[in-house]
Length: 310
Image 1: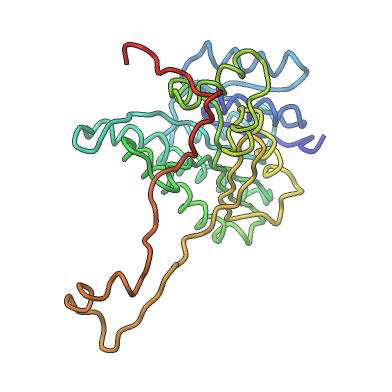
Image 2: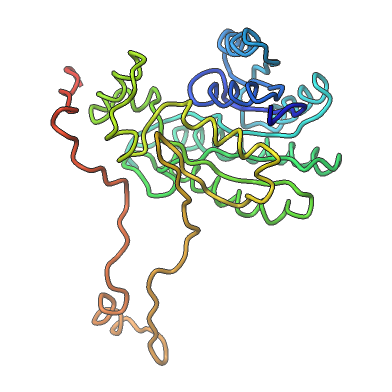
């Protein structure tokens, strides 16, 4: 097994995508520290790993505080003797439009996603560097952080920030042989289960049937298990040369997201005055960048009515 002898922490791994990551890491031989805020959910996750011969232990605590990060790393070391892999997946949603978003809506999402990623990576990287372990850091991003999404100011900011931190950590940790990458997953979750556009795919998944090719291929939309293989790969020795990347995966599709680069450049002798920009902006830069996700029309046979009462 590719991760035999390795020890991993996966935050937010009681259910959904995080659970799939933890189970795949264990399947590949790693001992796993599972994390969730609910004790029963965490215990079920551990049992699911142990029932097929894997090794797992739970830490029940909210991600964000430094104390939780320290507890996660200490549990890995005390239980299994070391730490090689950290996957930061924990998150919450507080979706609403800008003018209705409260301070608490914003702070809660930033604290768990962004600060929680920072505190956990800082603690893990400190341990790995001190013990000369060429570790693997895998942080979970989102298409929302790459392109934006209506009603998700807080989530978009956090996920974009995570990718920015990953690029920085790749530079800072290179000498220690520690890699840092972001994964941008697209998969059926509790959130997508309520979106009519994805209803046919969710139906198939719930029945244990293959999702239609339109979703898997055209949209790159699949199951949690479709994402888990990439997590295990990035956690392995085989990915030692992969760092500082934002890698998308979902369904049958694997993508490499670009680092932000200028897409148009223009010059004006003496600089750009207000008048210059008023008359020449469009000609100078051409077509502007799009924002948000643009989904293709849903084939008629995959269309489902919107839920009533919504």
